[in-house]
Image (tube, rainbow, N blue to C red; front, side, top):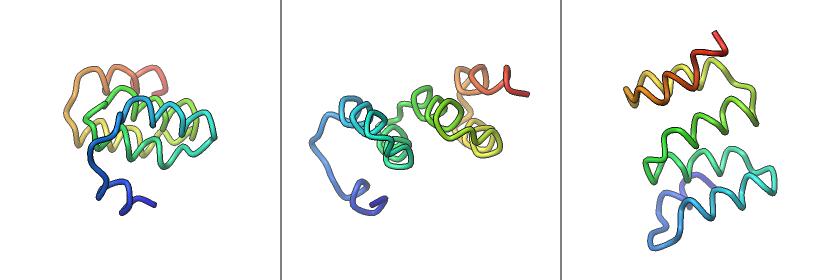
Length: 76
């Protein structure tokens, strides 16, 4: 599914990401948010829905986004 998401263009990423979360398709939601540069939403999926602190911390480090680091810091 990840490859398919990355090949798609011309869709409303934030809306589709929320739909994916609603259907508990968390990995797909993360990939969509990541593709659209929605760092905070991507971090939220990793932390709030997948409970994956290590991956969230790694992603926050990769994107170097202060808000992403802010979202991860309460879990440390």
